[in-house]
Length: 443
Ligand code: NAD
Image (cartoon, rainbow, N blue to C red; front, top):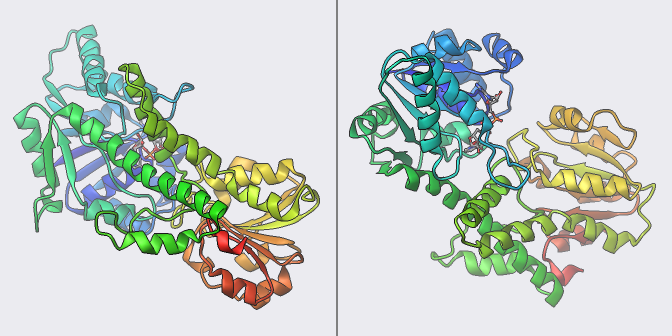
């Protein structure tokens, strides 16, 4: 099938590439000319495992095209996806300006019947706004073209996005017109071969499903961080508690890791946007507000541990920081916990030597040149002249350090473990002080 995708970010680029990989003819369109130019030369703007060879292979095979030419792109697709950003507005609600700008562009250029599919995460009712925006453009130019608007929220995880896209747990299609449903089922048939993964529902339920999924996952994380904070106060070890509850299949092992708070481009904004939608409909979403509040304070927790160790004596100290991305296997630093930590360390007069396997260029872009930040090209280089180590992102390569060597490198001999990667006994046996999340017994 002929497919057009607006937006070549994490979602648009991965989706377009996976659809091309199963044989569809895909045009990806973006307003960022540098990005499009780079993609046409084989430069992939994001780090996502497995993506680069797939983009190059499908581009070379002539199934995946990149352009800034919206008119040509609209003319290409039988199905047109909207996969542009929906950042938070000042009041926490989702800002739809990019989505509606695309709807306007589609309305200006469609000449034949299409299905417009919203893949961006958008509040309930957005499909109606997209429909009326396209209709207004069509009527402004006196054109009468039939079109459908469907919702097809995306559930991929950054860091494993290609895998999620090629082997989705489920494909949610929200559409009222059976012809649109059939078209999308045909599009996704290659991903739906060994068992049924497609869940068809009305548009509003599909829009809400995406928020419900992210809010549930964020809730699990904040819940576990709350338990961690209680564990710290009462002298218990949340890692033991985690093992004690995860084996209950009603609870499960996933998403019950305490840590330095959730970040990324989705959970923070989606929890807030859902709470805002609820409020706009006269419902105070108390649980969602609490999930957000717990997360916000958790992002400051690593710095609290630093203060607990050093008191007010932080100025002039140098902290090695391992991990800047909001989670492993991505270069994405949007809303990352590392950002809060770094700002607090700098405010206290400390210096930072940071290493992340993929996010250094992003950190450089965000923070620019500053005297109190050195971006290092290895975990070991970050330790040079450092007084203490803070682990913020659980990249695999940080999991088994040589603690004896760390003891020799770190002048103050202290580790702040924001992801509970280490066993306190092992760290302490090497003569280091250890602070983890919710590990009351060691504090
Ligand atoms: P992103 O910021 O990485 O990419 C968005 C892209 O859209 C950018 O390249 C931007 O230049 C482009 N764009 C903006 N306006 C445009 C226009 N008028 N025409 C063409 N291109 C335009 O965003 P993302 O992370 O891919 O997220 C996109 C949507 O998907 C968001 O609503 C997000 O909430 C949702 N989502 C994201 C993830 C994720 O893990 N990143 C997962 C599921 C859903």
